[in-house]
Amino acid sequence: MSQLSTRHLIGIKFLKPEDIQLIFETADKFKEVLNRPIKKVPSLRDVTIANLFFENSTRTRISFELAEKRLSADVVNFSASSSSVKKGETLLDTVNNILAMKVDLVVMRHPAPGAHIFLSKHIDANIINAGDGTHEHPTQALLDAYSMREKLGDLRGKKIVIFGDILHSRVALSNIFCLNKLGAKVKVCGPPTLIPKYIHRIGAEVEYDVNKALAWCDVANVLRIQLERQDIKYFPSLREYSRSFGINKKLLDRVDKPIYIMHPGPINRGVELTSDVADSKQSIILQQVENGVAIRMAVLYLLAEKRSHNS
Amino acid sequence: MEKKARTILQGLQFKLTLDRLCHQLIEEYQSFENTCLIGVQDRGARFAERLHANLQDIVGIPNIEFGKLDVTFYRDDFRRRSTPLIASKTEMDFSIEGKKVVLIDDVLYSGRTIRAALDALQDYGRPKTVQLVALVDRRFNRHLPIQADYIGITVDALNEAYVRVDWEGLNSKKDQILLFPKKEPENLK
Image 1 (tube, rainbow over the protein chains, first blue to last red):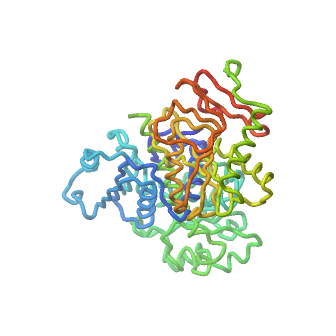
Image 2 (image 1 turned 90 degrees about the horizontal axis):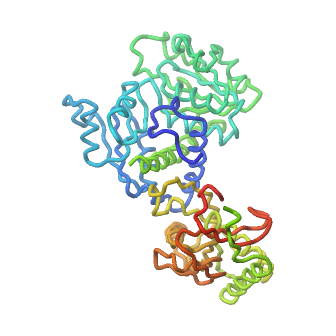
Image 3 (image 1 turned 180 degrees about the horizontal axis):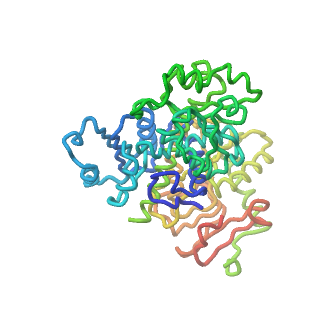
């Protein structure tokens, strides 16, 4: 298999395991490029990419922009806060206006789940999902799995626990899809109010005891409490959450094996992770960020290649 | 397909050609000081590996600098081919700044791979000189003004023909150069 089975990266749900492997293998090559003295290749010289961010982002946006620039693509940036969206323009109109300026690929983050699927039915450009509400965040899941693969090798049979706010997290959903497709075992752990009722149906077991979850897993992927998406109180206080579900050094010391700690960022230090854990040797949080650029380069490269076959 | 192929070079002739190329390189570079051999991935790298080993045997210098360069991301036919390009690994753990570079590829055809390789080389520093070794030179099929400095064998063939180099122990039982009358499917490596 040497090309993706899909024209868009809307969600991990729509990828085949072979697609994920191809993205990983391509990312390996780009990681080598990123470690050279000159970190740039001319592959996407004639490709124009629009980064449409209808929701705030620092890491993902910078990571995508760097990946695009390292591939020599032309980049236009757009953020909803400083645009005509405020004047009442619809999503389709906004995107069509940008595409009229001959844009090939669209990287979009949007607060509405499914915005990318809607868009893919109406426009010609290839679409990459950089997060749609509480639905999916495919490149984050890919870079998470890629970072795990780097540390653990083949992920088949490996045990991963996702801690925290599963209900509001697009990272959790994409991670569960991705890890399942790679043959890993997934559990989720958090307060019952923040775990969706039917999560077991998509291949994630539920564990409410942090100690048991840590003792079981090879990797702990700790998510942020998304206060901005919580319209009601899901737990009494942050302090109580931190005491019951926060990961700290004491908890990790009780486990007799090394566990890798991951976090998609931004970290709320002292809430879901204490600083001594976030900065410890077990933490591969900064490697995740580094791998993010390589993964995004691979996705952009493979989708741009796809474009020629359709046009 | 295999049956129709014509053998251009094999056996003793093949060995003599490799030896001649080695001695031509030794004549030019002598002790290979400040010189590195770079094979173009992935078929050129097989040839480069062989040349590198032979050279070390002949001159008795154990560590001539050697790298493998992948040029996939530098090609100008990205998105213009019917089948996607899959990159190989670049293995270059040294800078080529100020060095004499011997670029090695197995078949010199359109010249586009070498153009891409020259671009890719820029990212590793500014070489003092670059020379090109090609085992097979298809001199009538060039798209660009690129010529090899050292040539194993010159093949005059039609555009649709395909030249393949087989290496003993890698993809074949014996060293040989084959000429196919029609283009080989691209997935055969």
